[in-house]
Length: 591
Ligand code: ATP
Image (cartoon, rainbow, N blue to C red; front, side):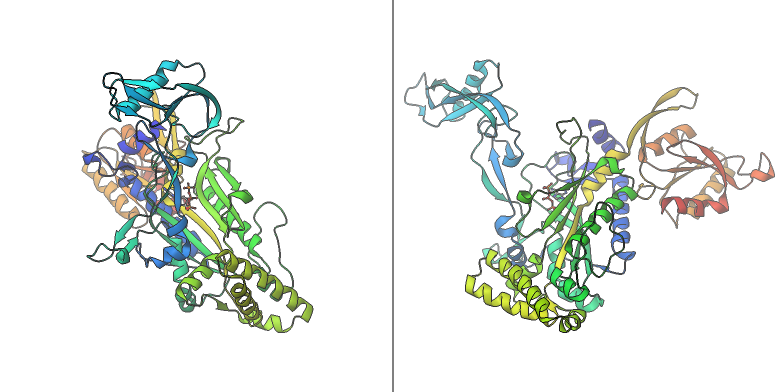
């Protein structure tokens, strides 16, 4: 990982934000190559998720929104992580990320100053030592702890020891006791307008998804889309992470690419199609069908997203499809699959395999989100489904009763969970079940939610390679090569005149550069030995090198005139290509 981090800085993929002022923890800037990489990732996601589909449209909403949005979504109350501090160093950790440790704990009930008896502390303190470690190191840590409380020459009181197994109460770095966990809300607060008062408080969005729900009705009204359809968005999100770490993986400012795909409730699907299709086995379920319920749609999006990652060069073997266990699911979620990438810093499982870290979560979120916004805003979030109304009229009475009852129960469950009093919940749910019979419902949603920065980091880790290649004199040397998929490579082609001091070569090379430039990012370089120029582009991950040499000018025979050397980054193979065929050939390879 260190080599990757250093390459990122050296070649301008990622810099520390505000580096000249010592940096700011959890914030990163993308340099010239990183900016191109990120842009390519986002553009390709946008193309795949909306432009190439009939059933998904885009949105570009603001970062600061009405604070009620975060009440409705639950972020104001529950978007919090447990936080603990080291009692010795004050370093802060997320309590749920502390590694369990075993050993002997040294407890002290307090300390008194051996030179000044008036100075005492009755604050208890403990230190965990790994088995076999010298007890003096516990005493040293305890003296430091009490010294910070003004007991300079501490005599430790009531030392006692205790064996512990798998405790998460101690700092894994120094064994010191941690504070009790406190919940910490991760939203960044700010004020709208000049007065810093409670009523002017607003938040930087911690996710892009909520704007999609809040604008659902507007988008549905103007886009002529009917459920099932989706709305997607790419944009910045902010989380005041307690412990940003693993380079850009956990940052405080990052970008998300989210899709909310709205579907019919299963009861509506059954009314229209007679039954609800469910996944028959592993793999992609194929083209969407009218009889798909939430499980098929969820499976469909998991497979689509896995295919997306493969299509930009992350091999399936580097990805993990992790199905959250029932106890891990949010209360409204019916199923969530996390797509993990095996980062070099991932933990290893019992078999020594990298376990992977989350790139994306794909959640089946029921009708929770739109229902919440309906409740908090007082504006209806339901849709009218003509097909459902017509189909319902043709159902027999027993079927109508069964579907109504099921819909009633799921709506009542939602309302009760959101603390509506039972009688009110019952009445509302009855009304909503009657609405279903008239063709109205609140859509359910499947949410594939991915992080741009985590994906960029995965692509960088995956691309990084070292091999050997001959230098100018034919001597083998180590070559660092970023094997990005051409689709997302920051620069697609580098154009080089063989020699800088030959005006005909330079002129021709500039012509080739200008020919390619309308179609792709091109880097033009005329300085230094050609081998070194190739090597620089290998490190940048440029998949194609185009060299204009004397053959191009026709000096070695008319048949080679207006041809160039095309060099491929990964195989280092070189071939001759006609200039007028070059753009089409490269476009074919980078699309
Ligand atoms: P984690 O458990 O790692 O904190 P999460 O489950 O809270 O992530 P979601 O709320 O599902 O994440 O956000 C969707 C996606 O946004 C994640 O899969 C990830 O790619 C990205 N993301 C979330 N938090 C961060 C962060 N602090 N830095 C970078 N990307 C993030």
